[in-house]
Image (cartoon, one colour):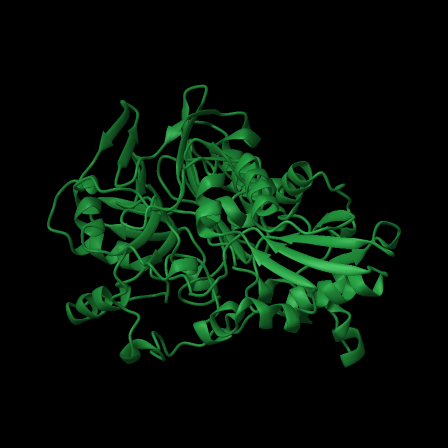
Length: 486
């Protein structure tokens, strides 16, 4: 059995999703539903830890949410009125089960479960310091850094220990933390990663995206603010702001690709932004054509916007198979080469003899784009023009998104004209960085004070990259090798 999802290697991988419930007898079931809505953010593994008034029942496994938590017996084993959950795609630490979250630890004040979306950029430096002081790490996840910082803090109250911990780390993080008495949500000072607060009857809910609230029928209250800690107890909600306020730098790629289109992030509809990007593309890089075709699913809203702005008809010229698993038996090279058709198939009746505009969200390595273009040409397209709803991806992300190294990013090593030749299109254009900002409602990018983290396009990293130097490039965090299940 070989991993074959043919497009995964040529996309910026989703980060992770977090979810937490405080004050509901169905906390675990609600958390499982919330994780299902956040499945797009991580598809390698999932976990839930609850608190039943005495113990912390937990269930964590590799796989997707429906497979892991589809059993009534599993949900019944996770008793209690509070729970925290996590869906994971590994960006730091590897795929072993020891890294599946939420992570849990026993402290002198009791148990604590933590789920983390994002990536720390100084975890190696902090880890070295902690190990020298006697800490013994059980995982290779940067999330465990928080646990050891909390354990070694000299403060008495849990929330003060957590404040002490986050003041020592650098990077992007949204955290959901659960103890015997509290549910705590945390966002990093720049607010790179999302986190929202909702309410269902008397229960409070924390979620990476509003779709997590929608699926359980919860009311959206507000975004957790950058640098804010929200402490939820039986007494209610308390907001703590331990950092000096700075201008936020929310990840702009959430609008382009990561977030679900039906989510509201930072007060803005993701769907509307994606349609606006398509309109910007139509204005910036118009081309004579007969049909606008999205590469499903992420390209659909932008293709609609492009079609509306240009007056060129929108058609589903590529159909996606939604039932492709993450593994597939590939016995021969011939079958391996057909991998792209496992997920997408051309709709010849809408492509044959047509001048086609293909709309996609990004080009990473370029391998998928090449296969898609070939698919469309084989279906009889007269011309193929590609329009991309993000600027060229020229730099890796270190804030919770798994991206190839710079030498494997096509746009970092080729100009647009040579990219077009490699991919096999008649023309290629990307939305400009100013066009992308305009799509969010801003006049453009303020180069002196950008509103978003856009480092993957600009190389402007807003948070120090302490760990990412030559000394740590090939560093091994653990000698333990875990056998992965077949």
